[in-house]
Length: 262
Image 1 (cartoon, one colour):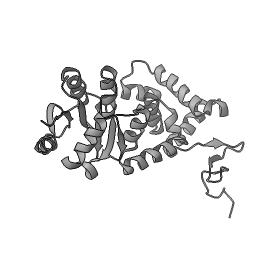
Image 2 (cartoon, helix red, strand yellow):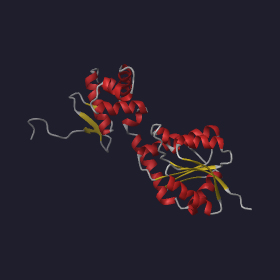
Image 3 (cartoon, helix red, strand yellow):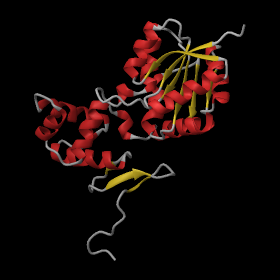
Image 4 (cartoon, one colour):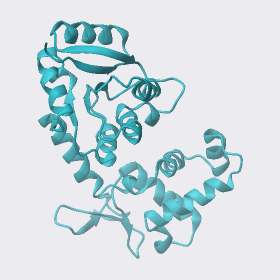
C-alpha cells in the first residue's frame, strides 16, 4: 500500500483551502491531517498534530489580532522549527512585496523547503513532488522568487532602511511624515515621548547623522530625506545633499540650478 503524505494545510482563504485539500487528496498521495488559517493556528497545529510530516503554507496569513510580521507563514515556520527542527514546509504566495522576500532571506532557512509562486505551481500534480522533496530534505525556489530575493538582497546592501530595526523604521516613517515626538509616541501607543527621542538617536547613529550634525532639527530633516529616498545621503560643507552614482562618485541629489544661475 502506497504511503500517504500527511499534510498540515495552512491557508487563510476558505475556498482556496478547500480546493487545495480536495485536489491534493484526489491524487491518492496526500492526506490532510490538520488545517490552519493563521500563523498562530499553524504553530499550534504543528505542535498538537504529531502525524503531520510536512506543511503546505501560504506566505501571507491574515490574522486581525496580530501584527503583519506575526501573520507571516515564514514566521510561523521559524516558530514551528523551534520545536520540530527542520520541519518540512512548502511555501507559496502571490505576494510580491519586498518584505516577504526580506523576511525569508533573514530567516536563514536552509533545507527541507520549497518557495514558489501560487500562480506557477499550485496544481496538485506540481505540489506533490515539492512536498516529497521537502520531506526528503531537498529544497527548491521558484526562479521568479529567487530573482526577487536576490534583487532585495542587492537593494538592501545600499538601503538605509535595512539598517534599522522594525520599531526604528516605524518611527522614521512617522518622522518623515512631519509628526512631533509627542505625536509619534501617541500614534505608537508609547507612554513616554522620551522613548521616541532615544529611538531618533539610534536612527541618527545608524545613518551617521550624529557625525555630520549636532543640531537635532537638522538631523531630523536629513533623516526624513534619507527615509523618503531610501538612499545613502551625505551633506557637503556647503550643505548640498549628495548621493552615490553608478560609478561610486558622490553627485548632487537635487540638480536644480542655484539662485542666479542660468
